[in-house]
Length: 212
Length: 308
Image (cartoon, rainbow over all chains, first blue to last red):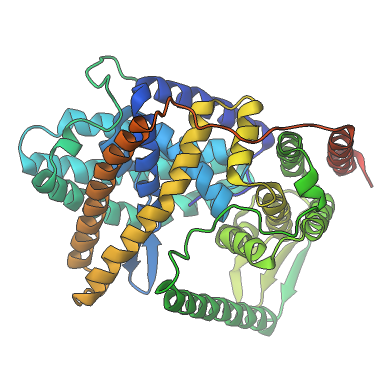
């Protein structure tokens, strides 16, 4: 779910822009300069992937994929998500223009956490990597929902009900996303394991002290 | 402290409203399905329908096309922040009217505008349904309950709040087309770079937009292949497994392509910056329009805070 214009208080919207810009700068710094075009292209594929709908009973949900982006891009994930959300807002109005910073934080921060966590947990066996995939798939959605709830609640007590509902609505998405991420990690570990080992665009993957 | 006024509605009235709302929802769903089916039919010939182009489609020479892109973007972005700062429904509705006038002035085709309105409709509909039920009751708020359903208390203040948010969102959404569709995407991004957005970022947006269409076509082709092999989406493990494999394959192919594209770009002498062919020139009229537009925004805000 993307936040539209007019929901957040202006101070929060502006603050999120500033914070988002700082994290984008960090993410760009962590991406090897030559790899920026690659990350841009990868962003296009994530954009297409996020348009995929999965049926859920009588309705359908679309994937949020913060976990998957984090796994595949590592520290560059925030940059990719910021670019992707800019395009989604410009093309489809998915996410308001003034809420762009907030939406980038909502999806990008979970992606950074998931990427870091996946690298720490994936181990050397496929089963373990698949389990780590399921965990970060669910965690990505949970964190995104949590940040969404907090941002909505920043509008005052009137928004508490909406924030709670938004959190609850993400529970089924969490389950689906955990399954899809786990299956996808399994698929990639058979087909192209190097995608899981070294995130695209992070020539400095070996650097220590990543704050996510 | 005054006791809140309680308005009791007979059961048939909200029943009627619910029935109408459900009818409307079904109609919207059917429209979407038909639109989707029609789009799928034409998808055979066309490249891709799901990702619109952000290029000049309006009649040339209108106000927004002549406006210097840098000043246009800065003005409308600032104006958007003024609009979202409004608190009261009256000024917010006035902002929608102003945006509608802008759409008419820019002579934007209605399809793009409608798509944007549809893009925000889900979120806003949820707000309109939930907020009257959940906003905190201030002393003095009138409460509406329905005979027979006393456990649901509707607070009209919630509806006003949701409508105000809806108006603000719509006002900004309507402005997006005059702002973005009246210059080519390359010019818009170059203008953003001149306004201080790092060139690295604007180039990534441009490159990403170029390849959206390629990957969307790839995705379409793979989905066609899946359907041809009898794949039907259901709510089960198998569907999730197949979707995961599909996404995995999409990423494998895309990431392979990123390497080839980068090699090709380097071979053609890419130095980290695409050449720019556009020259920006701001005339006094551009500044005048900016000042006038922002004044409108400031007047709206003043009216919102201190007005009648």
